[in-house]
Image 1 (tube, rainbow, N blue to C red):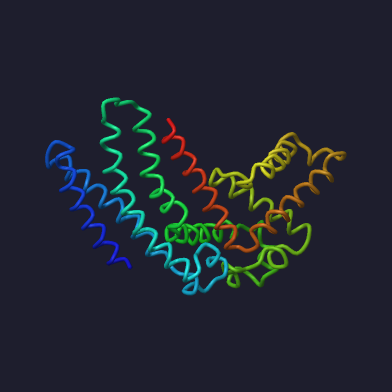
Image 2 (image 1 turned 90 degrees about the vertical axis):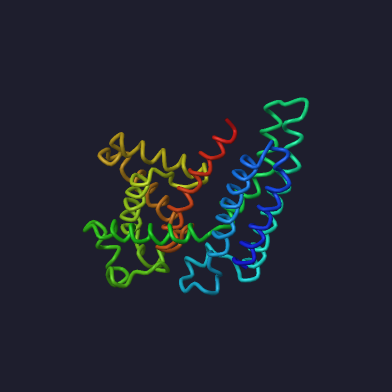
Length: 272
């Protein structure tokens, strides 16, 4: 499918250049835009095609990132369809953009309509990069876990050598409220390290923010507030572990949080 997509992309680029040389007033601009489109669209198609299928992955934590075999094939076909859509969309939109009423909002609409499907394929269906990042962050999490303050968590699963992406959080690393409290500081270390929220869901972020404010205000040193604060922290930790489930799930949380931040930054640039 990768080779088929590459051939179709190249043929579409050639056809695009031949068709638009008159629109762009010569070969130079037509070739430049055609080659640029060809490279960008192939990068999209390549990233989709090199995303492994779910059946090829061993760890269940990583399988959650990937698509079922049938869906993966459909997505790869959709990436070829996206190529056709973008080329045709630009050809159709160009006369409208630079018609008698050349206004900025036409360019905005044209870019959104023609480019957005390609961005969706990149961000939502190209998972090879996401998987690579998750594996990388998993290794970073193992380094954080090597700190002596997390020894009790590792003892619950037989030591660091017994860890893998499918190591469960609840019932594995976390078995008691004391473990949940220790896990809380691992969560905090990762939030601080990667500058990400406790959750990509806003309601949970407020609870985390309230907890952090309580800690920073000295709640653990106040006998009246100490028990309530610890209980709140343990609940947050258990909620986090229930959502992310495994050690690999924590790596996916880091990956999703950073990709969400990058996506919002990109959307902000497009809207400016």
